[in-house]
Amino acid sequence: MILFGQTSTGKTYTCFKLQDILAHDLFDNEGEAFHVGLSVFEIRGKKCYDLLADRRSLKILHDEHDQVHVGK
Image (cartoon, rainbow, N blue to C red; front, side, top):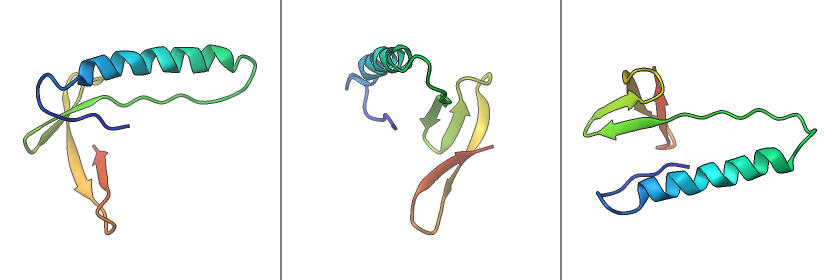
């Protein structure tokens, strides 16, 4: 899920609700093996930062299908 938008459009509220949903899913699937991954980054203008790695700079790339990818 990608959240973006202008100031005061509810991005922070949505993130908190996602935490609740994830916690419920994790505990409801007790005993099942699964992997959980999380990426949190900020895109400001043409710059992108990894918010879980001391704001390390990341690259924003487009593939041949015009899909956006964030990488190191």
